[in-house]
Length: 124
Image (cartoon, rainbow, N blue to C red):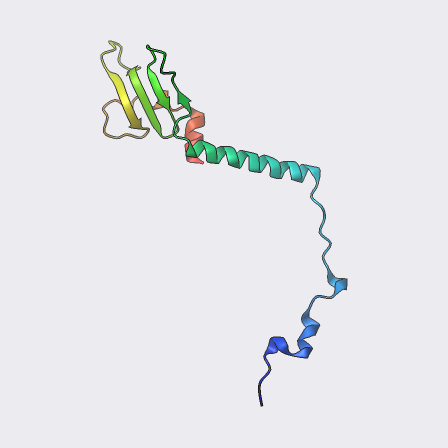
């Protein structure tokens, strides 16, 4: 005699939901739809912010610009003077990671280079 699996038995039909036990789902309100839209919009901007290497790029036609590129994770300078050096003898040139541990004096100007909103963006 062949065994019939449990799900193929005829008496298992009693466990199926009946039309009388259906859950009435409410439609999303206007505020809920706006909330979902704002979330998608903000999420897209966050993805773009993390994916783009440079948020601010200096025009190549400007000859005296001290900043070349400024991004969330990398800063590039043409000739940025140290804000803590009164005699203006130390300059930062080239591209560096924001948290560069090897460049002397770079950790001292990190507060000048990273405003609070950039730190908050890096954190989240």
